[in-house]
Image (cartoon, rainbow, N blue to C red):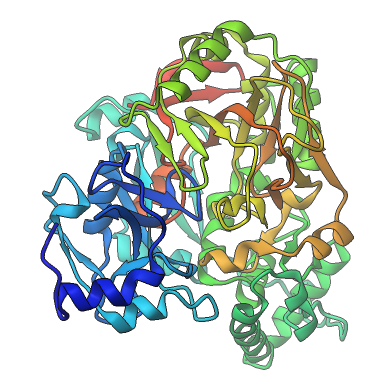
Length: 569
């Protein structure tokens, strides 16, 4: 561990004593863990001199970046760090005021850990803005994801600027192309060709239409929908000022006409996002541009483009759908379209084999395959052969998921997850109502034992919220919603299934893992995205879990026929 700076060790130890958690002689010196989040993202805590402590970033000079995240994530057994964040302050655990790593360190304790008395005290104050260092980790390399080729070529900075604006849309080929990639790639990877298209101007047919009852959701009353209402005041006020400025600007009349048409076609605004009538022939690109201009943050505009095939703006859903689904797959697809969630009582897999593999790996706690949070949530990336066989043999479920995601999907990977019997919101941030800040994607949960509807920490989901286009995607506080708002606005389903059963959920839905309960929960989670999406997310440098970092990578291509065993890498 690097020597302490700025104050004497004796004085610092005396001052920090009230802020330190109790010691644990069984933990190796220099260990790191994540807390207050998930097993691939959360507040970083390091074990030093018999106690756990976090890293406080209250000072503008505090050092914490992707280089430091890389070191932490590799120490946790994952491939790399993809981003950093500031997490909520927690009393009595802050010890350090920044870290400086070269990138070659094997453990965080080998970096220079800075100390500042003022910073440590600030990060112990829960009332102050979040200032505790966090990371987001990934077990995926870019080379394992589909290749993206832009025609014509667009530089990353220009691509980000255009997609965060309101003048252009992203359009990618619906199906991957391997032969094209052979000519342009260093490895034989599936490839998607993409391009940018300018939105058309509004037609004169709607130029004179207007309405005085246009949706205006950015009001003081909307703050009650959010857990972090005080933080959201600034965002709501800024978006309201922006919306008014656009409507009063040179193109205001066209925007009003477009909005009036969208409202007639079914658009309505909630305190947290829009329900847009996307995928219908009556909605023009000019109207989508208006919705982006008035309601969506720059990152939300980008995700609307990334999810165009899921919304039916392009791809299989927007076409003639010549390739059809089996009746069983069609039923799953239709239920997902309606509710964003579907439960299945028996998945038809070898439960005894899967349970032995998954629970054995969770119990083994191999540090290179297993991540554990401070609250006792653990996830293992160990290989589960019986699961992989079932995924390859079962065409119904994968084909329904591929259809839901626009015709082609990536089965990125899987993990087994254990929830302890006792959870708190501080220990398990997923217990708040939230969306996953990654847009439209599907997760399959497989129950390894019966999930009790009351005591078993069941996933709860607000049915029908999956199709929301959220106003903001940038920060965690923008995606956490109050229980009263959710239950008064949506029908809530509690996803309790028997062992060997499971459920699909679009994690763009408002959902949570119930913190109440006394029984442990063990599940296997399999993750799917639209096939090209995560490659685009990585190219754009977005700090979002696409794919979720703490999985065992598969990167299999899934079509309407099921998993075709053709990996992207």
